Length: 193
Image (tube, rainbow, N blue to C red; front, side):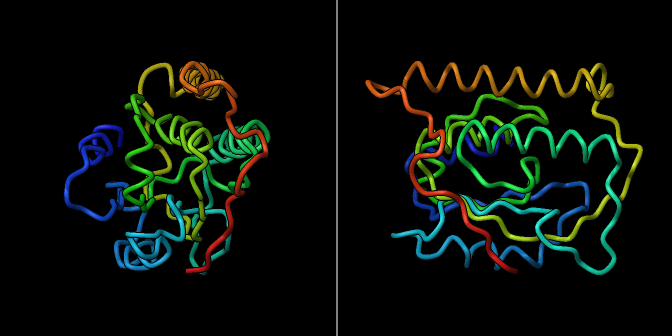
């Protein structure tokens, strides 16, 4: 996703960007709902509309792998506590970004932890965040993260390292206040699909 976000921060003629995972877990027919939730490109209602697989139950939802769900809950809670957010799903790849959001997000993380860097940068920039419920679909319960990240303990440690690195980097450019959110500014709201 980082490679997807980077070229859009150049000030070109576009209104925003929608990202969707390519593994079949997201439903493209929901894209218009995400665009609507962002609102007017000139004055967006939300800077980031993030899908949440845990905000609402849908008929036919899959059961997430226990370890993945536990790690998602842990990291989501840590991000919420540290940055004053109220997310329910820190990892969902189905998102819509306003032009303002993309201009504020200099994402360098290229792996599965990329959304965690987004949340740190979004908190630092004071971006407005809305979650939109999306169905919970796991088509391949045996999907591998690759290498050491297949181990849940190693994956959790990696995610925490990415958050720490992103926080250090964001704070180094934070200016006099050095403020990274921590409960200040607008809190995210929830949006219904």
